[in-house]
Image 1 (cartoon, rainbow, N blue to C red):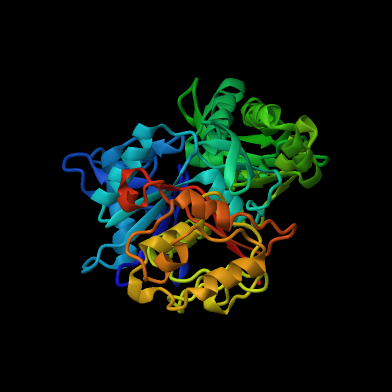
Image 2 (image 1 turned 45 degrees about the vertical axis):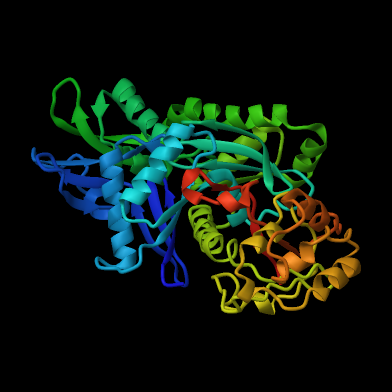
Length: 470
């Protein structure tokens, strides 16, 4: 494929860009500086963040994302265009395909705004994926298993708690309270307690250096500089970690309230799984010191922070972007065998985390295929790319213990029948009938119920996962 595939974690505080074959290529603050007269972009990312609060009258530095959604459409479009140009080059013959991470709780209007901004920025096609699901996959949670897993994704603008089972979100709650609100709480505390005005960069620095969700055994202090609200003159004071903990506690309680709300609505069987496995925390704000301990104390459920919580979500959104464009329309062979899962073309599919090995070299046992089975995507494959032996499907199905494929299915898969005499629902039942207790491979893509009208732009959201283990 000549088009590049880009995954963008469009966060309120930071944007991470994933490029197929290279991994994460950009990690920049979500800040844009533009001229106030003609709207020309002056700086993006780190350079623009350094301008916050320091710009002259003709330049405005701002955050175009607020609470996880677009607050300034024009600036967001300019920022996305900058990212796409940086990755694809200023002159490119083939527009890239882009996948964007969005909060699960956003409205359809907000989803459409993200899609429109991405396409206007230069994307050929745009996909969306819900943040809790992307974060769960990045945290290596076995979401395909028939058991409950809970994740809390705490970013800069929103916090989302979700329970995931069988490749889908069972219960979720979203609050537009996260890292930025914590910074604002620190700033408000300084103004109220010490009559000191500080900027958002300073308040963020306080949070990162001495911030803690619980009182530290050994108190830490930090010098904070700002403007005195009474005299109007610059002033510096010493602030303790205990004061910061006091300042941010009400904000943290709102985030934990979302987690409690999800736990209250979780079905009993899934709740028992969560008690055993605990809660996984992801997102940049989850790195706040002792937040996992604070969450554990108030929910009664063990919590732990995912490995690389800042990066796992963006990595997998890019990985999904690649597969949504390559595998979904061109899967050519699916052998349902107890000892082999064969994905036979194209053989050069690679991704970070797979050690640059072809998926065709993976031969794990087939464990479970979700209700939106990958097998339905076979119908979209060109006949020239499909396997030429229809016996592989019937024999493999028998070997895997699956129910026989519907009449006409094998012929359609091998290109010997133009119109299949079965529905995707029939295929799903057949493909999902095998349920090993410990699956080592799960590959599934959301496919619209009417696969002949497969239109990613119309709000198509990948809602299942791709996960393989050697």
